Amino acid sequence: MSKLTGKVAIVTGASKGIGAAIAKAYAAEGASVVVNYASSKEGADKVVAAITAAGGKAVAVGGDVSKAAEVQGIIDAAVKNYGKIDILVNNSGVYGFSTIEEVTEESFHKHFNINVLGLLLTTQAAAKHISAGGSIINIGSVISRLNPAGTVIYTATKGAVDSITAVLAKELGPRKIRVNSINPGLVETEGTHTAGVMKSDFETGMVAQTPLGRVGAPDDIAKVAVFLASDDSGWVTGELVGVGGGL
Image: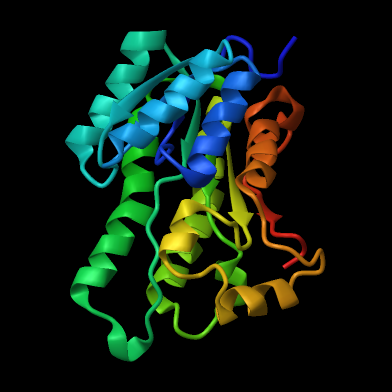
């Protein structure tokens, strides 16, 4: 039997990149998946089409995770379509790099509203429906350990995700809900191409620091996300799982 048969999963920010790969991997393992998107309905619909074409179950649901009312809509859609929630992946995120001289109120609030507040609001709403055996997976970053110059706001948000993961594992542990974080290294996605990271000096430097000598692929992250969602990780909570080729 597949590892996630009978489970219901919400994956935020799943219209592309890491989120899309996780949604597809969950469906392939038997889960019914809510594919959340904030702006790219077209991308989310493509992910759902790919899942259903392979015999899986999925529905696309729009919603900005930084807004409580829209978060509630995502949760309501999951319960309406599938009757419950077993797995939540807090993948929605934005990133932009800036030095301390370049910090602005707008940039700060954009990053923290989505990367941190969005995670909290979605977890708060979903946890009301997740029962014993459930799994919450946050998507952090190895950047919270590397702390490179010129990334102060983004790195701060991912440091917050690390701490939130540890706190919520303790809060939700008595309810037998596990909370872990996957902290990827540099992963090649539509986003990293759009941001100009790929084929740049930044990519070259990151690969040079990576013992396994390559950039990651979304599937590298999705495989670990399947493990953390499944009963195989039933004794794992409060962990920051680095998936970055040793970076």
